[in-house]
Image 1 (tube, helix red, strand yellow):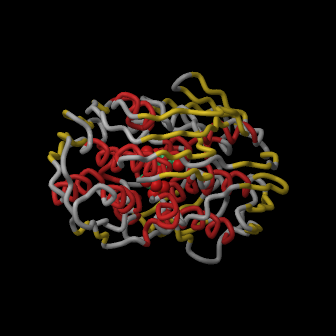
Image 2 (image 1 turned 90 degrees about the horizontal axis):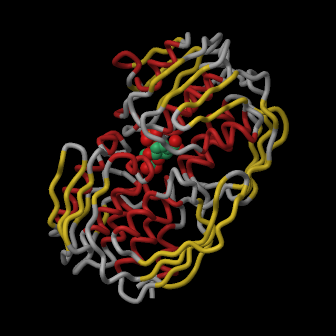
Length: 419
Ligand SMILES: O=C(O)C1=C[C@@H](OP(=O)(O)O)[C@@H](O)[C@H](O)C1
Ligand SMILES: C=C(OP(=O)(O)O)C(=O)O
């Protein structure tokens, strides 16, 4: 069982954005509760290579911004490691800065589609070259004068949206970006606090170019996507009661809370408050013996996309059928997360079937131990470490280190909470 309380580590999406927007602001910025995960450290390394002075002190980061148009041409390749957020958002900024740079990443990044960003950036006037018509790394990008864009997004993706919002800061007129389904809106919230001219009307975002962004102090709330593993662990293990403090509760991220409620899970939000434009609260989660299956599809998908692997583990412990649909995007994350979840849960004797855009899971199942192939994907590794809490026999992971991508200290925390 899991028992106790803890202060949640900083949000990955917000930490990336804090480094990037501070780097292109004018003046001194302080970022508190920054996530020292490998992905966010990749963002720091890329912006340092572009001449930004970034100083890490404990969990705080001090960034001396270069100004919007004053990043330096890097004298080395920009390596984003495993981070999709870094490469896609950074391309939006590079599109507006007048130099050529080359971007690479690890093996997983090399398989993830970039055309969703490079095509619209090219249409704004940015020069981009790369494998398969700039769909894959390595990518060579030359920024400069950009035209405004009026863009209807074909995929629900905060990374695409954010990249285009960033490029629009440099454009020669007002840009409009239209989403089909609302995705996480940290870019809109944070850029406004940096003084950007952004107007959001439901699914349409209007951006006017600016001369400069102001410097800021940013507090990074806790990452609900990381909390998800502990939430599920507490819901499915008898006797659990965990208080997770300082959880970011931005509505574009809280799909998992809606799902847990629909499944009859025992979770309560305490002490809701606003911090720097983002909603934060504490979550009290208790063992829930009467979980029920549910349907997860359509608009809720972007609000819980990264939580689906661990939600699948939760669904094995619920009575009845859980259907997850409209989640094609899972196939182009760090691994094909539909296949990774289904194949590994099958090995554990779960009753689960793969769909083209998701999966169906019938519960309640007794899970047995198995050798898990993580595909070096942090979310898969953590999801199956939670399955291990209830399995008969040991779950062994072929890679635990990948968890440092988003959740440094994960196993220490799990050990502290395990009673
Ligand atoms: O904007 C972001 O910070 C993120 C957006 C999502 O990706 P997509 O935009 O590809 O859906 C999410 O999966 C990723 O972990 C972080
Ligand atoms: C998909 C993820 O991140 P990214 O796209 O930044 O690699 C994730 O953290 O689950």
